[in-house]
Length: 99
Image (tube, rainbow, N blue to C red; front, side):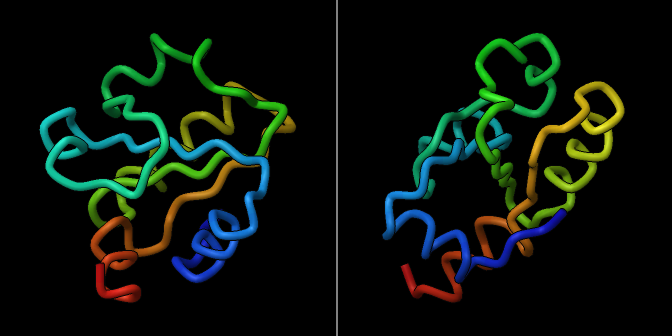
């Protein structure tokens, strides 16, 4: 259910076919991000058409709590989807890779 910053970085560097969804607010995404698509958490359910559930999906937020909660909600609605939350969120990713 969670993916480490190191594993996500490996996916990015190796060009793994996955979808990265940043669920922070637009202004937060614009200030700093690690790529992907920005869909604020309160807009995800109305924008499910933007998610490719045939691919692995990694959700990220500031500290990993909201993305983890979102996955719990989505798992009830979408079966057989592979979804992960970035452990520790964007903050952990930036700390680990000193970005």
